[in-house]
Image (cartoon, rainbow, N blue to C red; front, side, top):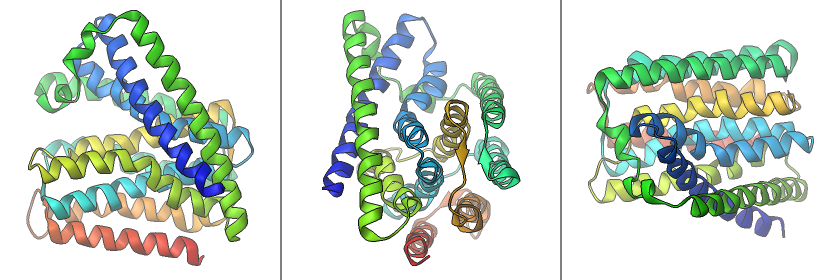
Length: 316
């Protein structure tokens, strides 16, 4: 039954996330926000909603390991699974903004998270506020840079047809999205805890593997489909931005609502170093041996490393 709960929970999270993204973008058009701002902020926040609801729900229920494992595992999956599989299908070009801005911010937050968690084995409310402040600064700088560079890729993610959606439909979408996300997170956390108990492993293991992969599936599916169609498969900058949002917004907001305790020592002795390692390895991959490209061989190496990470999680 726990597997059914997990599958149903993930399905509701995907459906709820889609409705929330559409409602948020439509509402942003009503508020006269530019497409660039919508693409950089509103869409990013809305697509992080499933992770946020899962982490908040888990923290409130006393399962902090799921809150942390969800975010750490999702960040690893974004690079090891989504980026790796997409690169195997179609090599990815890297823009300079990746290593000049997005990557340094992701590394800063990843390392900062380690020190915040290890300092007192907890992410408290004040530290949560600090993460949100960093996120706001990042967004301000991101919008400023985007205005200078006039990025087309940002506006391509925004559906123009949503500007004509009625207010009534927006409210209905918000309600459906909110209910589906909350119900999905409830079922997912319950299913994960029950499955961990029946398998004799910790909630942390289920969080960094099954839950993390589950919340990354929509992005993986979209990237694979685009790669197969020979379209612009994936923006490395957007993927790194997702990891930044996961740490700063998901953990930041969760910690403000309910401080997150580190219950499993493996979070600090293993999981977070895997997350930092996957982030750090992107720089040598971006420049060696061929510059500014993640080719099929590099993608295969990343996927193999991800498989090792999953295996190690269960072995530990």
